Each structure stands twice: as C-alpha cells, then as structure tokens.
Amino acid sequence: MSAPTPFPPLYDAHHKLRLEDLPFWMELAIAAGEPILELGCGTGRVSLPLASAGYTVYALDRDASMLAWLQSQTLLDLPGNLHLMQADFTRLPFSQPFPLIIMPCNTCSMLTQTQRGEMLKQVALHLLPGGIFAASLPNPEILRSQPLRAVAEIEEVFLHPVDGNPVQVSSEWRRLKSELIVTWHYDHLLPDGRVNRFSAQVRHSLQSVSDYLREIQDAGLHLVDLYGDFERHEYLPQAEHLIIIAQRNATPENPQQARST
Image (cartoon, rainbow, N blue to C red):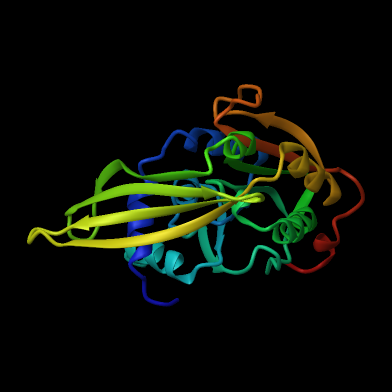
C-alpha cells in the first residue's frame, strides 16, 4: 500500500467523532452472521469495531491511502479476522458469497448513477440467497431542499492525531441540478500561528428516494426496510438519513457459490 497522504488522518479523526450508527451495524451483524463485506471502509471506523467483536470482516476501499492509514494506526497488528482490500466497488474481487454487505457513511450517494448500478449488481452477485445489503446515506429529500449555496462556517474542532494541534472543520456547498457538491475545509492550527488548510470535495447525488429504490429492484434485490435514523424509525421526507435494507431473494444457487472460495 502507498504511504498515507495528509487527508486520511484528518478524515479518521473527524469521522471517529460519529458513533451513533455503530450499534446499528453491530445489530445487523448479529442477525446476519459472517463473513461481512464493507464497501467503502475508509479508515476502519465501522470495520474495526465489527472485527474487534469477533466477526470476520472484509474491508474494501478504492483509496489505498485510507487503507494505509488504517494499517499504520494498528501498527500492522490488525485483527486476524479483518482483511483489507483495495478494489473498485463495480468489480468485486471475491469468489465467496456473503450473508451481509454494508455501505455506511454516505458512500452510496457519492457514486454516480452508473457506478451505483454496477455496484448493486455486484452486491446481488456476492450475497448469499437471503443475504442482506444495508446502506446509509443522507436523505436526498433534505439535500434537494438545501439553498443553492452555503458559505463555510466552523462546525467542530478536533485534535490532529499526529501532533495534537487543533483542527477546525468547516464546510460549504453548491447545489446543482443533479448533485450537491460539498467542500470540507480542515484548518490545522500550528503553534507558531500558521494555518495549514486541506480541502476535500465530495459530490452527493440528488436522485429521489424512488430512484434509489428502483436501482435496488433493477439489481435483483428487494426492499426489506427503509429507515430515517439508526434507531430504526420509519423513513419520512424530513428524516436526516435514508437507510436502505435490501435482500437477495432466496432463489436458486448464487453463481458465485459454484466457484471455489
């Protein structure tokens, strides 16, 4: 794996502040069993707790620098049941099927429609019959209702994981016809008064909820539940999240199972 870039430690420290969804993913693991495949594992915010709880987890990300940071922070002593893999979501490198495939932390909405369609087809191919796919993303109805622009304001502060100096986090966005472009600014405050800024941009699809559900169906999955939060409350248009639980039909043998594992 390549050496970490400036972004992974910032991403890791920022996203570690978010813990509210971890019990939700753990409950899915308890119900579905293992092995578990996480698509878009980043620096391991979800995969590490699952592996630490004893589950065999395949943690996949397209970004080698994220995986390198995750590996460096565990001093190369990863749990033996956590397997890191760099790969594209649209070409999964597995021959084995999974009872549970998860996509936390808004990753699903950051794919293009074409990428998402291919990813869902891969998910359907790699699920056991009756297997579960779960994805959490920002509620597209909320995203579609945002102002056209928002200027950056400081939202939170955390300590840089390398030197312990403060990092101020702010974000701004532009809403276009089909996507919301969010720019995150990380201002690293140094003792001598200098500020090192690192900015990262993400694009969220503004497709409707019905569009997402149609994509699920087109991939050969069927909807099981639709939640608006991680306490499993019913999805409503004003909910903060869109959490999709879908299942592969328990139909004839998955072609992936016919191949050696």
